[in-house]
Length: 451
Image (cartoon, rainbow, N blue to C red; front, side):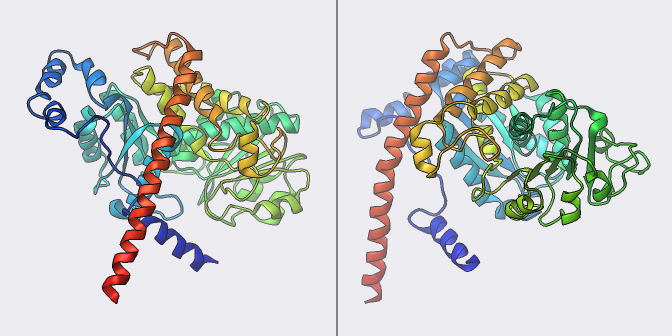
């Protein structure tokens, strides 16, 4: 099975044009006149306009719809520190998701450096090209410093998605899980296993939606993060506890929620059995969860279980959040993606799961999707995410004072977003037919050469 997956993945990435993204022109280029407008002498006119007024870059260039996906490959999900070059397929994939789900153009940029100050300087130098920066797969604690400093230096949104996209999606899922379990978020005892970028950011996000810090226990590879431990990083110190728990098993006794952001098969049978009634188990390590979905349900039939995998109910996937956080931010020319915008996104994602699911979404996934213990979150590709979450983010940007452009009509905005995706899908299907034809021609050429 694994060899079959490996072969299919390599074939997918290599057939036709290698990789998953390409640059295509958006203006006519078939005549000499077209080319004289695209480059010399016509290009000098918008360049001079931007020199006079920098904001015109958003009118005459692709800056306002262009995101940099930047990584050094130091903390790639499931692979660890594989370096800049090996991380390129992952960053290309992220760029592809931006385009597919929100019609955002993205360039993947892999930096061969792990030193934070040099990364900060490089990204700052690149920033004029882009409307926003998506930091990706950068190890903690360096990722905190890099994001924090870039947010101070730049007037465009900078978001480390491993932190914030993950936290937003988990928060949305937990709000709905608490509703299903008939528990109040301010009363639940939470164990977060994994104190890296995602774990710390998730803990902070849960505080903002009503969780109590004294009821959160964070666990890392050395056990419970408590105040007796020395040499704790600043981010971990923030969640050090004195509740007496030392081990993961200690922390699990009577807890209501387990959020795993660590490694596969970490959660034992006894750990699950000692949880409180109607427990919530988010086992999000990928590709192998801290405990498998079926095993968790067998051990605790009363549990609400989610994983990061697409082949089980309740996939918690940050693709439900990041395309729309950036879409709403770009469309309002926001200076940043702030906590108000993240919270708005979480509530919007959670709300969509309560609504009647469109027929085409149910048809795509081949099942009835109705809010409950097996359907906490909308599915990736649900068009309501584009319209409702992007709008919620844009409204929060305007209300919190970071927007530099207001949206006059959100009804018209939603229609515009749907139109963008429809147009993009039309050209994608046209391009797919071209790629299939090119692949067939390439194979035919190879066969003729072999003969």
